[in-house]
Length: 248
Image: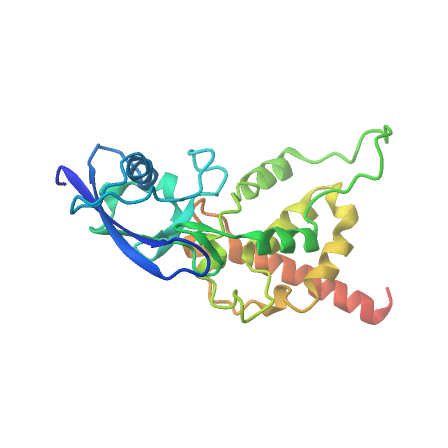
């Protein structure tokens, strides 16, 4: 590894502006991540040929692989900038925004579509009031552990970026919302509102629109079994469809 890392960043001044590439040289530090490089470039906005430029815009929050806000394309692979070490990447390291979402500026994209889709499928437990309703149904230690593992989704959008069935050309909600439906339906209290979620999954853009490319499970930064979740929700949807058909 050399003393400096070459970083090429796809930049865009605004939603309607043309994109361009800028190259930066970042001093190498053992164990540094892509996010470390972005923070250095933001503080020192000088290209590798010595030209001063504007600080690179990007999204970040927790910086510890939890919030998912820093998701970008790294050498063509959608992932979280805070969790990828540059000494594991080929140079030059090329950074680009997630292409399935509108660019706001540089690496910042508008992921409001994901929020809207989550609001549609409602993978949470709704509360009608603040009165004490007593204890809810208990869950086993085994189920609690299973849900804890499945609840690691950061909402980064990498699975949606890699999905050929997700984008402006389709209404498919993508793997992340489907996975969250599985997690909510597994909860003993959440199961009480499972029908509402499954009805959303049966609408256009629901789980049946998955093309089974399986890219989502390959790119998930936290290793979630997304294809298993899609299969699980699809099974629940089919059961509900048969019950509706038979009137039971």
